Each structure stands twice: as structure tokens, then as C-alpha cells.
Length: 256
Image (cartoon, rainbow, N blue to C red; front, side, top):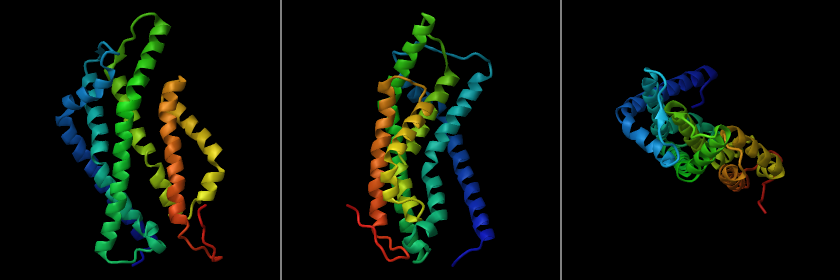
């Protein structure tokens, strides 16, 4: 059954409220384990940063809250993805409709959620194990070269940096899925993605330069290389769905 604009907005509001509740609940649980989470987040800096500073008496509260909120965002990714794909399922279902019984629709949503969550976790793991330590090492060397002494880093700035990197990594790994969805709803085509490959690569390099505060070629390559690979995978995903799509002229795209 089709819904009007008001009904769509009501559904969107309900799903946003539920997503916020999921994040708050996950953050509350994460706050209980904040010390353990902080220990894991500080591991990439082991041997690179001797000790962290806390400059204000109340800063420790902010550190715990920031750790809990970022952890809550990550932990609530699964139900939040469920809410998102449940909302957009009419657009990404075959034929752009919500046809089919409830069990089939839920199975389709579950498939999208599983793919999105797997990509998100893969991005977080990649940043944590591959990118973080080289990035921290370079930044510390750069700071020491400027000051001539071992840099003193506040814990709050370090946690903000690490959490932002991890979250960006998780979202960047959504590129293939985003390409698939945008192709399915007719926003982009594999031909467009292929023809704009150079521009896309340049945009990815600019994005990496903004997101990562490193300027050396090695650290930049660690971030840009997977994004380029993901973009190419996104083109393949786009071809997969687009070659099955029949347009008003009756033409069907055939991938080469």
C-alpha cells in the first residue's frame, strides 16, 4: 500500500526516534565499560605516546561521555541500519515498489542490513589495525620535529581523533553499497561512474586529505587505496543491478 507524504514523514520521524533510542541505550551500556574501551582505543599509541594529559578537573567526565557516545554509535549500527533500510525498502525493492509479503520484505531488509554492517565493521577494523598506528607515528614525529621535544597530547584530543577515524572508516566502506542503491533508484549509472573515474579519484584524495590529518604519502595511501578499490567494486555492483534494469526506451545495459 502506497503512503502519502505525511505518512512517510511520520514513519521517518518514528524511525529516527527509535534510532536515537538505540544509540542512547548503547551509549549507556558503553559508559559502564568505558575504561575497557579507552584501553582498547589507546593501544595503537603504545610506545608512541608516553602519557596523556587531562588539563581540566571536569575533562575526565567529557572523555568518558565522548567514549560512550562514539561507542554507542558503533554498537547501535545494526539496529540503525535496520531502521534505515526498512524505511527505504520500497525504493530499493524490485520495480521500486513494496510488493511482496512481509516475510519476503523482512528477508530483503535483513540482507541489506547484513551487507551494510559487514562493510561498516570491515572499515573500522581496517582503520584500527592498518591506518591508526602509522598515522599516529607520523604525527608524533612531525610534532617532535617542530618543538624539539616529545609532544604532550591531551587524552580528549586523542580520543576524538581515533573515534573520528574509526567512524569515517566504517562509513567509507559503504561506497559499494551506496553505489548499488543509487543505481537501483536511477540516480547514477555504471557508465557515469566509469566516465567520472578520474574526478572521483581526485575527490577521494581530497576527502582523505581532509579526514586524515597526515600529509605524508604513505599515510595518505593507506587511506586512499582502499577507497579507490571500493569505488571500483562499487562500479561492479552498479553494473550488476543496472544491466537488469529496463528503461522506457526498452534498452538494457549490458556490461562489457
